[in-house]
Amino acid sequence: MKSQEQILFEILEPLQRLLEYAKDPVSEISSYKALLDEISTLVSQESELKNDLGLSNIAQALRDWVDLHGDVGTNVGSEKLQTLQRGYEQIRLQTTFSLMGAYKSLKSAQGEYTAPFTDEEGELHGVSAINEVSGGVVYSSVGRQNVILLPKLDDVASSDQVKEILNGFLQIFEATPQAYNWIIDFSNVKQVPLLLVGTLIGYKEELRKRGRYLLCSWLRNDALPEDTMRTAIRMFHLKQTAGYWFSKDTA
Image (cartoon, rainbow, N blue to C red):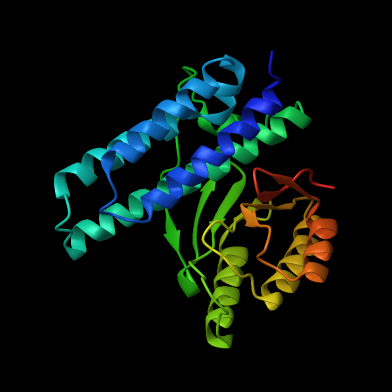
């Protein structure tokens, strides 16, 4: 019988494919439905993992997104496109938060990640408010976690782009309570600016002083030069899973 950790790792790859499809508002609806079935099959073997992942939240968000996608078809106006993009960001937020929460729950019994999804009746709830700051950085506060989505960076970012992203980090740092952790989602970044890495190391230290931590997720294997990647692995305690790097602990 597969362990929860093995099942979790198997889920990562189809989830990332699903998010890649979701970037294109005219992708085939069948792509989403097939991946939803694949993910549901993987988690059905473990009810505890299913709860940790908040799969019902992700699945419902995806169904809503697919329904909207089907209504608009290929003629996507600016208003509908904005709605689709916001829905996609919500799915990314929910997925990253849930995956990191499930992974952490395998290593710790604190339950800090799963609690924000559960109300007094035991019902699970997903990400709600989505905020955008400088540089196209998007984040949402869930429980005591700031899930932070970096903007799309396909090539070498300009100094102005990096500056705007760093301003976005500062805005988040100043706008949220001191008791919040940070979870950084790199899934839209193909090449990570070196200054960005150094700045995040600085924020990691500032959060540590507050008794909180910074976790990285969806970092591509080739997103950094080899030497810098070694530094990132050490500083952010990264573990490679399904072709991506995730923070494995909060030390």
